[in-house]
Image 1 (cartoon, one colour):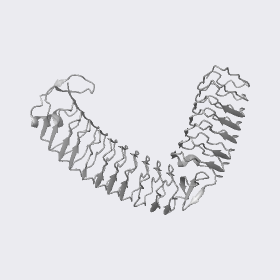
Image 2 (cartoon, helix red, strand yellow; image 1 turned 180 degrees about the vertical axis):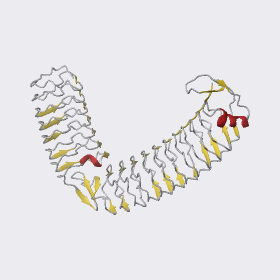
Image 3 (cartoon, one colour; image 1 turned 90 degrees about the horizontal axis):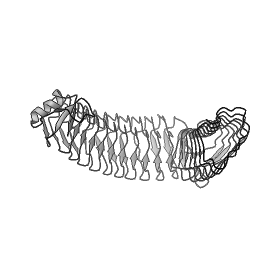
Image 4 (tube, rainbow, N blue to C red; image 1 turned 60 degrees about the horizontal axis):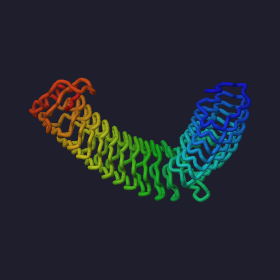
Amino acid sequence: GAFYNCSSLTSVTIGNSVTSIGTSAFDGCRSLTSINIPDSVTSIGDGAFYGCSSLTSVTIPDSVKSIGYKAFSNCSGLTSVTIGNGVTSIGDGAFYNCSSLTSVTIGNSVTSIGKSAFSYCSDLTSINIPDSVTSIGDYVFYGCSSLTSVTIPDSVKSISGSAFYGCSSLKYNEYDNAYYLGNDNNPYLVLIKAKDTNITSCQINDNTKLIANSAFDWCSSLTSVTIGNSVTSIDESAFRGCSSLTSIIIPDSVTSIGVSAFYGCSSLTSVTIPDSVTSIGDYAFYGCISLTSVTIGNCVTSIGNYAFEGCSGLTSVTIGNCVTSIGNYAFEGCSGLTSVVIPDSVTSIGDYAFSGCSGLTSITIPDSVTNIGYSAFYGCSGLTSVTIGNSVTSIGGGAFRDCSSLTSVIIPDSVTSIGKSAFSYCSDLTSVTFKNTSGWYVSTSSTATSGTFINVTNATQNATYLKSTYPLYYWKRS
């Protein structure tokens, strides 16, 4: 804010020892016609030149590493921008609404282009994205109505389908009911979007590597998709709301399935996630109510939050041997699930991970698990048997609440804390055996280091304590 809103300022000379231009430093200097950024500068802050509407050209030297949020936003007179080879990231909205911008040179060190970075640059006709770029965010070129051509390099691993919304002049490459962008060597590198939401089938080009964010979003009539063996990433919301899609074969080339990728695909009946996939994003298969079986490959390390929430028809899940974490709400509401094997690789079970899985009858928590999340098995009313592994130190609040068929539990000597209401409303619970009976106390505070001492040597009495006498207390062992 050093020169904030100095609306009559026309000229600035910046000395060669300046290393940073701070947030909103020249914000609102609408009469400033030119700026020379010296080689000493390494960062340009958020909104640094916001609303400098008389600026016509900017050269960002190689010394600069980052361009901040909305750094040049609303510079409506800006026609030319050269971004130096030292810049690694272009911030969200960096050149938002630079409506006169016709020429942009992006340096060869940029790896990410932030959300709305060039939105509403309505005079921009073409853009060459360098080989260094790996991600292109939401709405990057939104409303660039004069944009006719874009070169996307092979290096891009993630691109939002909304990146080119409103680019009414952009020429796409077409192939079987979908629009693509790429480069001279591979014009079908990225599947950007379906031709329209009413398509019923799509054969994805064999050279396609990336299915963009929201590519088939809410294509509710889509029944058949063939994914080629070159696709490495199914991006966020790629098939969200494709409610007529009954099956999908994910090829071995795919390494990641993005957030909400198959969200609401209510007719999907089975999915095999190959060993090549390393991560399943949050909400990936949320609400796929017809899904009956899922096989998760052996390279998946994490199952995202809400990944299979509400898949009420799911009866069978095979979890690969590399999964280390099962996310919050991962299988919440999968009421048809009758059995699940948690592999030895898992170290944490998230909050509400299996909540409402009323068809589960038994569960074995392996020795690798150290933490059972809050309400992890809440409402598993059919659960009759639970084996808690010998590395579990914490049983979260409400972890087994409303497991009304559970009759007995053994608490291993590794456990040092049991959260509030962990076994509340377990009406059939008659036996709780503590392997380590010393030092247990209860308190109404989760941070208390002492409380009411509890003698836990009687298994029948312990069950009463946990479900009835002290259900709203935190249990700890000193």
